[in-house]
Length: 294
Length: 237
Image 1 (cartoon, rainbow over the protein chains, first blue to last red):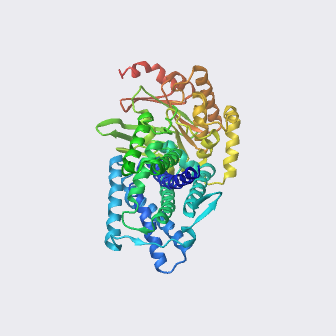
Image 2 (tube, chains in turn brown, purple):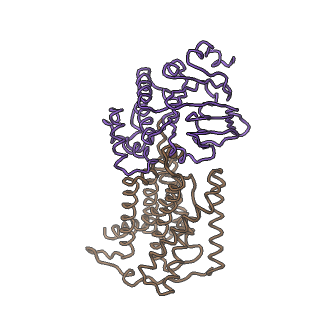
Image 3 (cartoon, rainbow over the protein chains, first blue to last red):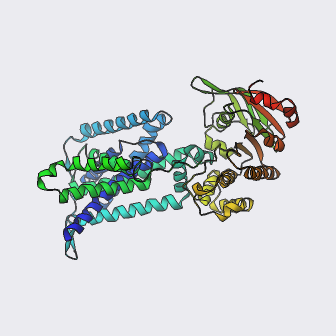
């Protein structure tokens, strides 16, 4: 039971990180129909931002904020410079653009900074564990769960209560009609990228705490996982991205905890097989996007 | 000077010519109807006016300003909007949220938006009963009412209405046309695209007939009726 609860919290922490990343992808996809594969580079940028901020003696909490602000600014800039000129082009053009942005940033990190990992010290207060009942729970895990919950709550409030949030939901359902209501298309798209940047920054910090270093490829794997989560949950659905993220987290942690040692090496293959099985039964994803009622 | 003035408007989708050299005008306070068979280019013309599809040629003037190169949301701020064909309410937003978005163009504070909303609820009591319901769960007629109310939230001086009777039961269609008549009494100028020519000519001051992307007939309802609309619809014009 203890072991199960501990693994449950681990899954919640990992799934939460995937959920934040998936949500970042889904927010942009919902208004632009683009899966932004340069999303991972935003995480990496957060990592380097924190690394250099600490190098220059900035206090730790401020360094984290700098990291998130950097990712947010970069996301908005990315839209303005790379995606806006091709906004009315085909989906393929936008997708290839996102690969180009990703590759360019990746090479810049490699050549201007270093191809090797840069260590980022995680404060001692975060590396420990707290005892709850009879369990030892990692502070980082608890922090991940808390941060995920607060982020999801804040985003939900924004989308439900603010006029800009309602406009974003409207634009996600029918972009042209939203414009007919006078909703500013550029503002909505910039905001979507800004939100995705904030989420990538927060997820980047949680990811950094787990691994303790940043390298040019840091964002690649988690964003690939987030993409799987988004497809699993249902492309275009925000709640789907969150659900997909948690499911993927639970599958991965569950396999790591309960697979016999002999087949542990195949856990990625097994988890992806499970994903394919889910998609076999729900081809549109778990939260299928409702078709507009006409 | 007409409120809306369209000159030699041309719209192309690739090699297909949807609208060709079409010209029409709508004066302040008028209801003008644009008739034509399926695929005659009526919706393309409206969408081009709103900047939703690019013009291949021609000019659109609204209230004396050349708007052909402006963005859709800027045109809405000038006081013209479109209630699109097929209603296209935001299905997963509530009735109230749909209306709130309708006021996105007005720079005023939420207070004013609230006043306008109350006005819409007075005009469409059915919507008030259902204000917290998701728009996707409304009936077709209610969705059409919501679509029109949502457009009115931006306080347009000119409303483009695309096929408001499409797919609705006859008694609901009558209700929608009552609403159109009451909008005229409120001083809203309307350009109405309709397949139901008889109904449209009943409320309109003037009409145009579009066939294969060209304006082939125009005039007062009586003139259009005597010119034999049926022939135009059958493509004989």
